[in-house]
Length: 328
Ligand code: SF4
Image (cartoon, rainbow, N blue to C red; front, side):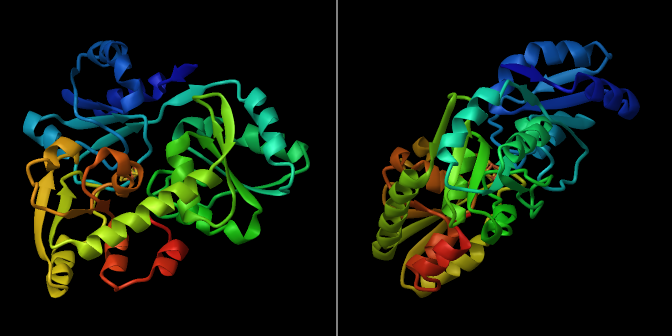
Protein backbone atom coordinates (compact mmCIF):
# COMPACT_ATOMS: atom_id res chain seq x y z
CA UNK A 1 0.00 0.00 0.00
CA UNK A 2 1.29 3.45 -0.88
CA UNK A 3 0.20 6.67 0.76
CA UNK A 4 -0.34 9.99 -0.96
CA UNK A 5 0.09 12.88 1.48
CA UNK A 6 -1.08 15.70 -0.80
CA UNK A 7 2.41 17.18 -0.57
CA UNK A 8 1.72 19.81 -3.24
CA UNK A 9 -1.36 21.09 -1.43
CA UNK A 10 0.59 21.16 1.85
CA UNK A 11 3.43 23.17 0.40
CA UNK A 12 1.26 25.63 -1.49
CA UNK A 13 -0.99 26.22 1.55
CA UNK A 14 2.02 26.76 3.81
CA UNK A 15 3.58 29.17 1.30
CA UNK A 16 0.35 31.14 1.20
CA UNK A 17 -0.36 31.14 4.94
CA UNK A 18 3.28 31.77 5.92
CA UNK A 19 3.24 30.35 9.48
CA UNK A 20 6.49 30.58 11.46
CA UNK A 21 5.77 27.57 13.63
CA UNK A 22 3.26 24.72 13.17
CA UNK A 23 1.96 21.85 15.26
CA UNK A 24 1.50 18.71 13.17
CA UNK A 25 -1.08 16.10 14.10
CA UNK A 26 -0.86 12.75 12.38
CA UNK A 27 -3.64 10.15 12.43
CA UNK A 28 -2.51 7.01 14.27
CA UNK A 29 -1.74 4.95 11.16
CA UNK A 30 0.66 7.53 9.72
CA UNK A 31 2.75 8.63 12.69
CA UNK A 32 5.69 6.72 11.22
CA UNK A 33 5.77 9.25 8.38
CA UNK A 34 6.71 12.13 10.69
CA UNK A 35 10.38 12.38 9.57
CA UNK A 36 9.58 12.92 5.86
CA UNK A 37 6.78 15.38 6.68
CA UNK A 38 9.19 17.25 8.95
CA UNK A 39 11.64 17.59 6.04
CA UNK A 40 8.94 19.07 3.79
CA UNK A 41 7.83 21.62 6.38
CA UNK A 42 11.22 22.53 7.82
CA UNK A 43 12.45 22.78 4.21
CA UNK A 44 10.20 25.83 3.88
CA UNK A 45 11.89 27.44 6.90
CA UNK A 46 8.93 26.68 9.18
CA UNK A 47 9.49 25.30 12.66
CA UNK A 48 7.59 22.05 13.00
CA UNK A 49 6.53 20.19 16.16
CA UNK A 50 4.68 16.86 16.09
CA UNK A 51 1.95 16.07 18.57
CA UNK A 52 2.63 12.75 20.25
CA UNK A 53 -0.90 12.59 21.62
CA UNK A 54 -3.29 10.08 20.12
CA UNK A 55 -5.27 11.28 17.14
CA UNK A 56 -8.09 8.87 16.33
CA UNK A 57 -10.29 11.34 14.49
CA UNK A 58 -10.68 14.95 13.43
CA UNK A 59 -12.57 15.43 16.70
CA UNK A 60 -9.09 15.56 18.29
CA UNK A 61 -7.91 18.92 17.05
CA UNK A 62 -5.02 19.84 19.38
CA UNK A 63 -6.05 23.43 20.08
CA UNK A 64 -4.82 23.44 23.67
CA UNK A 65 -1.41 22.03 22.70
CA UNK A 66 -1.14 24.55 19.88
CA UNK A 67 -1.93 27.44 22.20
CA UNK A 68 0.51 26.18 24.85
CA UNK A 69 3.26 25.91 22.23
CA UNK A 70 2.50 29.27 20.64
CA UNK A 71 2.24 27.92 17.09
CA UNK A 72 0.48 29.82 14.27
CA UNK A 73 -1.20 26.85 12.64
CA UNK A 74 -2.19 23.24 13.23
CA UNK A 75 -1.57 20.90 10.28
CA UNK A 76 -3.86 17.92 10.73
CA UNK A 77 -3.06 14.92 8.51
CA UNK A 78 -5.32 12.00 7.72
CA UNK A 79 -8.83 13.28 8.47
CA UNK A 80 -11.30 15.66 6.88
CA UNK A 81 -12.60 18.64 8.80
CA UNK A 82 -15.12 17.49 11.40
CA UNK A 83 -15.89 20.56 13.51
CA UNK A 84 -15.05 24.23 13.47
CA UNK A 85 -12.50 25.22 16.11
CA UNK A 86 -11.31 28.59 17.23
CA UNK A 87 -7.80 28.15 15.82
CA UNK A 88 -6.37 28.00 12.28
CA UNK A 89 -6.19 24.41 11.04
CA UNK A 90 -4.99 23.06 7.71
CA UNK A 91 -6.47 19.63 6.96
CA UNK A 92 -4.44 17.39 4.70
CA UNK A 93 -6.24 14.24 3.64
CA UNK A 94 -4.13 11.16 3.00
CA UNK A 95 -4.98 8.75 0.20
CA UNK A 96 -4.42 5.00 0.42
CA UNK A 97 -3.33 4.09 -3.08
CA UNK A 98 -4.48 0.51 -3.58
CA UNK A 99 -5.69 -1.83 -6.30
CA UNK A 100 -9.18 -2.58 -5.00
CA UNK A 101 -10.29 -4.61 -8.02
CA UNK A 102 -9.58 -8.08 -6.49
CA UNK A 103 -11.56 -7.21 -3.36
CA UNK A 104 -14.41 -5.70 -5.36
CA UNK A 105 -14.58 -8.88 -7.45
CA UNK A 106 -14.57 -10.92 -4.26
CA UNK A 107 -17.44 -8.85 -2.85
CA UNK A 108 -19.77 -9.81 -5.72
CA UNK A 109 -20.46 -13.18 -4.08
CA UNK A 110 -21.58 -11.50 -0.84
CA UNK A 111 -23.71 -9.07 -2.87
CA UNK A 112 -25.39 -11.55 -5.20
CA UNK A 113 -28.82 -11.16 -3.55
CA UNK A 114 -28.69 -7.37 -3.41
CA UNK A 115 -29.34 -5.05 -6.33
CA UNK A 116 -29.36 -1.64 -4.69
CA UNK A 117 -26.18 -0.81 -2.82
CA UNK A 118 -25.60 2.04 -0.40
CA UNK A 119 -21.91 2.90 -0.61
CA UNK A 120 -19.74 4.61 2.01
CA UNK A 121 -16.01 5.02 2.46
CA UNK A 122 -13.52 6.13 5.06
CA UNK A 123 -11.66 9.24 4.03
CA UNK A 124 -8.51 7.52 2.69
CA UNK A 125 -10.57 6.03 -0.15
CA UNK A 126 -12.36 9.14 -1.38
CA UNK A 127 -10.20 9.32 -4.51
CA UNK A 128 -11.33 5.78 -5.51
CA UNK A 129 -15.04 6.10 -4.93
CA UNK A 130 -16.16 6.99 -8.46
CA UNK A 131 -14.28 3.96 -9.82
CA UNK A 132 -15.82 1.72 -7.16
CA UNK A 133 -19.29 3.02 -7.99
CA UNK A 134 -18.65 2.44 -11.69
CA UNK A 135 -17.42 -1.11 -11.01
CA UNK A 136 -20.65 -2.10 -9.28
CA UNK A 137 -22.80 -0.33 -11.87
CA UNK A 138 -21.07 -2.29 -14.63
CA UNK A 139 -21.99 -5.41 -12.66
CA UNK A 140 -25.65 -4.39 -12.90
CA UNK A 141 -26.05 -2.90 -9.42
CA UNK A 142 -27.71 0.39 -8.58
CA UNK A 143 -25.39 2.38 -6.35
CA UNK A 144 -26.18 5.30 -4.05
CA UNK A 145 -23.58 7.10 -2.02
CA UNK A 146 -24.65 7.80 1.56
CA UNK A 147 -25.71 11.41 2.04
CA UNK A 148 -23.42 14.16 3.25
CA UNK A 149 -24.87 14.74 6.69
CA UNK A 150 -23.87 16.06 10.09
CA UNK A 151 -20.13 16.11 10.63
CA UNK A 152 -19.26 14.15 7.49
CA UNK A 153 -17.34 16.17 4.93
CA UNK A 154 -18.53 14.58 1.69
CA UNK A 155 -21.24 12.50 0.10
CA UNK A 156 -20.40 8.86 0.87
CA UNK A 157 -17.96 9.81 3.63
CA UNK A 158 -18.27 7.86 6.87
CA UNK A 159 -16.80 8.50 10.31
CA UNK A 160 -17.10 6.41 13.45
CA UNK A 161 -19.75 8.61 15.07
CA UNK A 162 -21.79 9.99 12.18
CA UNK A 163 -24.23 7.66 10.44
CA UNK A 164 -27.09 10.00 9.54
CA UNK A 165 -25.96 9.94 5.91
CA UNK A 166 -26.47 6.16 5.81
CA UNK A 167 -29.77 6.30 7.66
CA UNK A 168 -31.03 8.85 5.13
CA UNK A 169 -30.82 6.32 2.28
CA UNK A 170 -31.47 3.04 4.07
CA UNK A 171 -35.05 2.74 2.81
CA UNK A 172 -33.78 3.03 -0.77
CA UNK A 173 -31.09 0.34 -0.67
CA UNK A 174 -30.89 -3.42 -0.07
CA UNK A 175 -27.57 -3.33 1.76
CA UNK A 176 -24.57 -1.14 2.53
CA UNK A 177 -21.01 -1.65 1.34
CA UNK A 178 -18.36 0.05 3.44
CA UNK A 179 -14.89 0.61 2.01
CA UNK A 180 -12.53 0.82 4.94
CA UNK A 181 -12.11 -1.17 8.12
CA UNK A 182 -14.10 -2.86 10.85
CA UNK A 183 -14.36 0.32 12.93
CA UNK A 184 -16.56 2.14 10.44
CA UNK A 185 -18.59 -0.87 9.39
CA UNK A 186 -19.31 -1.88 12.97
CA UNK A 187 -20.69 1.57 13.66
CA UNK A 188 -22.78 1.24 10.50
CA UNK A 189 -24.27 -2.10 11.45
CA UNK A 190 -25.38 -0.64 14.79
CA UNK A 191 -26.91 2.37 13.05
CA UNK A 192 -28.85 0.98 10.09
CA UNK A 193 -31.30 -1.86 9.63
CA UNK A 194 -29.98 -3.12 6.31
CA UNK A 195 -27.15 -5.69 5.97
CA UNK A 196 -23.65 -4.22 6.04
CA UNK A 197 -20.82 -5.73 4.00
CA UNK A 198 -17.29 -4.60 4.77
CA UNK A 199 -14.61 -4.38 2.10
CA UNK A 200 -11.75 -4.64 4.58
CA UNK A 201 -8.91 -3.18 2.57
CA UNK A 202 -6.36 -3.63 5.35
CA UNK A 203 -7.01 -7.33 5.93
CA UNK A 204 -7.75 -8.14 2.30
CA UNK A 205 -11.17 -9.48 3.22
CA UNK A 206 -14.88 -9.10 2.49
CA UNK A 207 -17.31 -9.94 5.27
CA UNK A 208 -20.80 -9.39 6.62
CA UNK A 209 -21.14 -7.53 9.91
CA UNK A 210 -24.34 -9.33 10.97
CA UNK A 211 -22.81 -11.63 13.62
CA UNK A 212 -20.92 -8.77 15.18
CA UNK A 213 -24.10 -6.74 15.57
CA UNK A 214 -25.72 -9.47 17.69
CA UNK A 215 -22.65 -9.77 19.90
CA UNK A 216 -22.44 -6.01 20.51
CA UNK A 217 -26.16 -5.70 21.25
CA UNK A 218 -25.86 -8.32 23.99
CA UNK A 219 -22.97 -6.37 25.52
CA UNK A 220 -24.95 -3.12 25.38
CA UNK A 221 -27.97 -4.69 27.10
CA UNK A 222 -25.68 -6.06 29.81
CA UNK A 223 -24.15 -2.60 30.39
CA UNK A 224 -27.58 -0.97 30.56
CA UNK A 225 -28.67 -3.47 33.22
CA UNK A 226 -25.51 -2.75 35.21
CA UNK A 227 -26.18 0.99 35.17
CA UNK A 228 -29.71 0.35 36.45
CA UNK A 229 -28.19 -1.47 39.45
CA UNK A 230 -25.32 1.00 40.01
CA UNK A 231 -25.29 3.17 43.14
CA UNK A 232 -22.25 5.31 42.26
CA UNK A 233 -21.84 6.55 38.71
CA UNK A 234 -18.96 8.42 37.05
CA UNK A 235 -19.68 10.69 34.08
CA UNK A 236 -16.59 11.02 31.91
CA UNK A 237 -15.95 14.03 29.71
CA UNK A 238 -12.92 14.60 27.51
CA UNK A 239 -11.38 17.92 26.62
CA UNK A 240 -11.07 17.17 22.88
CA UNK A 241 -13.09 19.80 20.99
CA UNK A 242 -15.19 17.35 18.94
CA UNK A 243 -16.01 14.95 21.75
CA UNK A 244 -19.01 16.42 23.47
CA UNK A 245 -21.77 13.86 23.19
CA UNK A 246 -24.20 15.10 25.82
CA UNK A 247 -24.44 17.50 28.73
CA UNK A 248 -22.68 16.20 31.86
CA UNK A 249 -24.67 18.52 34.10
CA UNK A 250 -28.03 17.36 32.80
CA UNK A 251 -27.00 13.73 33.10
CA UNK A 252 -25.72 14.32 36.63
CA UNK A 253 -29.09 15.75 37.63
CA UNK A 254 -30.98 12.87 36.05
CA UNK A 255 -28.82 10.27 37.80
CA UNK A 256 -29.33 12.02 41.13
CA UNK A 257 -33.09 12.20 40.55
CA UNK A 258 -32.96 8.42 40.16
CA UNK A 259 -31.31 8.05 43.57
CA UNK A 260 -27.74 7.50 42.35
CA UNK A 261 -24.60 9.22 43.49
CA UNK A 262 -22.89 10.76 40.49
CA UNK A 263 -19.71 12.69 39.80
CA UNK A 264 -18.22 14.24 36.67
CA UNK A 265 -14.65 13.25 35.76
CA UNK A 266 -12.59 14.96 33.08
CA UNK A 267 -9.62 13.54 31.19
CA UNK A 268 -7.67 14.12 28.00
CA UNK A 269 -8.38 10.58 26.83
CA UNK A 270 -10.30 7.77 28.45
CA UNK A 271 -8.23 4.64 29.05
CA UNK A 272 -8.82 1.70 31.41
CA UNK A 273 -5.88 2.52 33.71
CA UNK A 274 -7.29 5.98 34.48
CA UNK A 275 -10.44 4.43 35.95
CA UNK A 276 -8.70 1.91 38.18
CA UNK A 277 -8.54 4.08 41.28
CA UNK A 278 -12.17 5.12 41.03
CA UNK A 279 -12.86 1.65 42.37
CA UNK A 280 -16.01 2.60 44.28
CA UNK A 281 -17.74 3.73 41.07
CA UNK A 282 -20.04 0.97 39.82
CA UNK A 283 -20.56 2.20 36.26
CA UNK A 284 -19.43 5.02 33.99
CA UNK A 285 -21.21 7.04 31.32
CA UNK A 286 -18.82 8.56 28.84
CA UNK A 287 -19.72 11.64 26.84
CA UNK A 288 -16.48 11.55 24.85
CA UNK A 289 -16.10 9.32 21.78
CA UNK A 290 -19.18 7.03 21.83
CA UNK A 291 -17.12 4.30 20.22
CA UNK A 292 -15.09 3.77 23.39
CA UNK A 293 -18.18 2.41 25.13
CA UNK A 294 -19.30 0.40 22.11
CA UNK A 295 -15.99 -1.04 20.91
CA UNK A 296 -13.95 -1.48 24.06
CA UNK A 297 -16.37 -3.46 26.23
CA UNK A 298 -13.79 -6.17 26.97
CA UNK A 299 -11.06 -3.67 27.95
CA UNK A 300 -12.91 -2.19 30.91
CA UNK A 301 -13.69 -4.06 34.12
CA UNK A 302 -16.65 -1.73 34.83
CA UNK A 303 -19.53 -1.03 32.45
CA UNK A 304 -19.11 2.04 30.26
CA UNK A 305 -22.19 3.47 28.56
CA UNK A 306 -23.03 6.21 26.11
CA UNK A 307 -25.45 9.01 26.91
CA UNK A 308 -28.21 7.40 24.84
CA UNK A 309 -27.77 4.11 26.65
CA UNK A 310 -27.81 5.86 30.03
CA UNK A 311 -31.19 7.37 29.19
CA UNK A 312 -32.50 3.86 28.48
CA UNK A 313 -31.13 2.60 31.80
CA UNK A 314 -32.86 5.49 33.59
CA UNK A 315 -36.18 4.71 31.89
CA UNK A 316 -36.14 8.01 29.99
CA UNK A 317 -35.86 6.27 26.63
CA UNK A 318 -36.51 2.74 25.38
CA UNK A 319 -34.29 0.04 23.99
CA UNK A 320 -36.45 -0.10 20.84
CA UNK A 321 -36.03 3.62 20.35
CA UNK A 322 -32.27 3.27 20.84
CA UNK A 323 -32.18 0.60 18.13
CA UNK A 324 -34.22 2.88 15.89
CA UNK A 325 -32.06 5.98 16.48
CA UNK A 326 -28.76 4.11 16.58
CA UNK A 327 -26.13 4.08 19.30
CA UNK A 328 -24.05 7.00 18.08
S1 SF4 B 1 -15.62 11.05 18.31
FE1 SF4 B 1 -14.75 8.99 18.02
S2 SF4 B 1 -15.75 8.17 16.23
FE2 SF4 B 1 -16.10 10.38 16.22
S3 SF4 B 1 -14.44 11.20 14.95
FE3 SF4 B 1 -13.75 11.23 17.07
S4 SF4 B 1 -12.61 9.31 17.36
FE4 SF4 B 1 -13.87 9.11 15.50
